[in-house]
Image 1 (cartoon, rainbow, N blue to C red):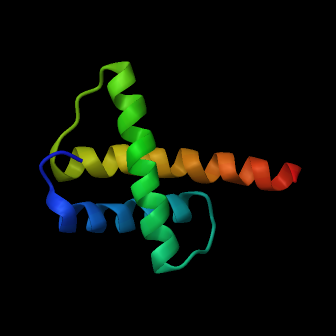
Image 2 (cartoon, one colour):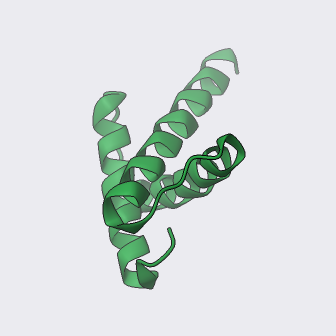
Length: 83
């Protein structure tokens, strides 16, 4: 999330977590959405950089964070089902 600042990262994290929650039809609170969004941002940024995808600004950060958050919730859902 380059160039968005700490407040921007928090806002993007909350939005990414909320969007991922809606896509996967889950129901979490604000704090969980923030955590999922921020961890998703790390996952998404790692994958995007590994694939050579450049992203920047609010829109790019939101897209990458949302993709990472969806992947995180999906994997956690698989693990939860098996346990």
